[in-house]
Amino acid sequence: MERKSTSLILVGVLAAITAVHAEGKMKIEKSVFGKTKDGHSVDLYTLTNDHGMIVTLTNWGASIVSIQVPDRSGKNADVLLGYDNADGYIGDTAYLGATVGRYGNRIGKGRFKLDGKEYKLAQNNGENHLHGGVAGFNKKLWDAKEVKAADGVAVQMHYVSKDGEEGYPGNLDVTVTFTLDNKNEIKIDYLATTDKATVVNLTNHSYFNLLGDAAGDILGHEIMLSADRFTPVDVGLIPTGELRPVAGTPLDFKQPKAIGARINDKYEQLVFGKGYDHNWIINPTGPAPRLAARLSEPKTGRVMEVLTTEPGIQFYSGNFLDGSIKGKKGKAYQFRNGLCLETQHFPDSPNHPDFPSTTLKPGAKYQTTTIYRFSAK
Ligand code: BGC
Image 1 (tube, rainbow, N blue to C red):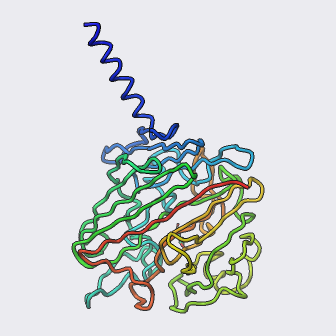
Image 2 (cartoon, rainbow, N blue to C red):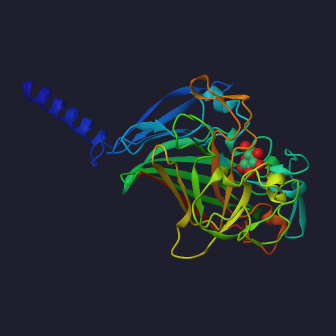
Image 3 (tube, protein in one colour):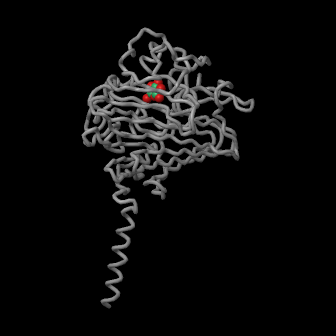
């Protein structure tokens, strides 16, 4: 009898030890974040690494909810815009933290041809299609589970987008895995397969503010973009097809520069974008994932590097934020309170045969990786 209870206690202790990961303090906790309108539970996953970096994720929209990272004095703050509960994400109109798909960014006039057939998508951004349509991947409840990762703690999200959803052809099976490691990196691995030829361009739409808690605009942040060229756009933000050198333009961030330094220049591209809202062509140098961007904030010393296997990156300086969104702790997100660095294929690629292809065929794998790496200096 006594022996039995001792072994039971031992089993319990062992289970508790394995729940806290072998890596040390690394752990994942799951809690309730809210409910969908039809009563499904929306979950929150809290990932912690050995250095006290904390990342929260939700399976609504496969979204990153918060990223707490230290400044140069070791003080943690949340560098992401977002909401306090699932209702915020369910009602969101600005893609805060979300996985965007089936096609991140714009498709001109919401039309494209594939294998001779024309497909019509929602025109949910003027006459153009934006971020997967009226109810893109950001508006879906994904299946989520904790998975093993060699170098950290990870959550895998899964969603099947039905043939014809939002006008896209083919059943698309999508898996997005988020891993937090001890190098203070969040790695996002995207994987998709289809049963009919389709187009795919997945990205994450996190809004960053390295001051922490959205404590001001992002104009004082410095940014480096590893790109000699960008894809200029028309007034509806659809690429014209030109690949233009950044040299001599306000889009030249080959050397780090304050975002606010030239954002109000009367350069036509900045007028069209109401600031920065463009796709930079990442210099294809070095092994992938390669460094695409380095963002730093001089007051706090926080630094974020973006590495990716993708050919492009959309730097969007939060020009459409106007105080109407009430985010975490009731804070209204004002003009340029956050910025996005969306790794991607180029906008409107399905209508630009010269751009790297976004077509996915049955039997092939869509596979990309993006890393957000944090430090302080
Ligand atoms: C686009 C912006 C758009 C925003 C919506 C960004 O990815 O580049 O033009 O307004 O998403 O939140």
